[in-house]
Amino acid sequence: MSTADILDTRDPRVVANPYDIYRELRASRDLVWSERLGLWLAPTHETANATLRTKSLGRIYEPQEPFDQWEIFNWLHSDSILDSEPPKHTRLRALVQKAFTPGRIAALEPNIIDICNGLLDKAQAKLQAQGSFDVLADFAEPLPVLVIADLLGVPREKANDLRRWSQDIVKMYEYGRTREQELAAQKSGFEFSSYIAELAALRKLEPKSDLITALVEVEEQGEKLNEHELIAMCVLLLNAGHEASVNGFGNGMVAMFRNSDQLDLMKSSARKNTVTALEEMMRFDSPLHMFERTATSETVIGKTTVQVGQKVVAMLGSANRDEEVFENPDTFDVTREHNPHIAFGAGIHFCIGAPLARLEMQNSLPMLFERFPNLQLAGEPVQRPTFVLRGWETIPAKN
Ligand code: HEM
Image (cartoon, rainbow, N blue to C red; front, top):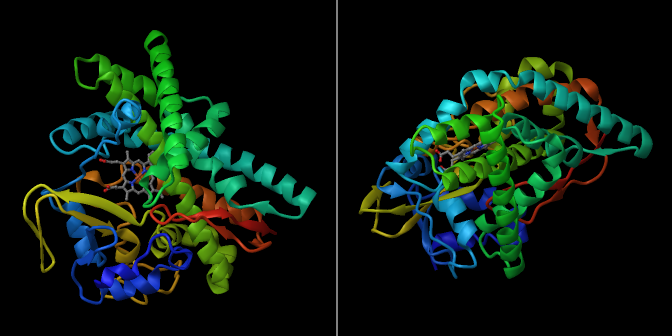
């Protein structure tokens, strides 16, 4: 048995705390073979970073079978920017970057503040009526969905459907998923893509100033972005645009509640510490823990030669606790200055939405503390059983 087999991603104790095992995995400072998963693990900052940056390690989508049953789901992935490699990736990335400009992101700040205020009003009313509210369900979850909906031009009333579709689809990224979860993912993939197709058709007839219109216009300028690619892009933006944001915020808030000195610091000076605090929230308990790559030619990472066709997993959550890169890596410090975490990835697939995720948190974090200056837990938070996408189900809080 290799060392990596101590990492059982379905074991609830490992889900509760993977960090002790990560420390053991990092001990050899090299890749570690996992017999259980049949792939290499890259647990250090250096190996995870190299895995994401090495060209001969590509994101290769393996279609689900039977093909007829998984048709939509398969093209939603194979035509998505996240699951493609150059030259297709370069073309898709350049197109979405053209539509997803810094100006368009910055212009969303008033929307973010407006959405936060609306959610905080409801949370406050709930607190008065019931004595507590849920930091996740009442704040961290709806916020990024509503923001990405505004950005794309999806009506806010659709937020509940978007959340459900996206939650069903991302279950496919976990190891050891059930047949029931697969069926739900298929159904949601179908409903989601049909909805986006309809919306894109409407924007062709009646353009607006939203991102879907910008992507439709890009599509129309020649054969640059075909219809499947356009739909896949919107679905990915909606999924990626909120799953990680919800969990990043929730994980960071639980870390804050468990470290009362840090919580007190945020209560007394949230605005001053927001920028370092949000990076520390991303690092300390990262929302995304594993990203796979496949070797398209023999590749050396660390001291290991990866053979063609073998997979390597960049372990972002472990890399972000690497004792050789971070001082006191297991300490949650909202004022941490030197923080080269890789929670947003690295290399050509580096998160396009990082500026938006950061802008959201720069506003939502201080607004939450300003509204509830004595914010505290109102019960035990309940963790999600998932490993790759790490997060909480509920975080009950009061003021
Ligand atoms: C806390 C929030 C977020 C985190 C931690 C996060 C993390 C990541 C990571 C690690 C990757 C790279 C995956 C890989 O290398 O295989 C990625 C890619 C991506 N993210 Fe994010 N993300 C966040 C928010 C967002 C938001 C708000 C959006 C969009 C509005 C977004 C859109 C994307 C897209 C489109 C990609 C694919 C880029 C490509 O393949 O070139 N993400 N994200």
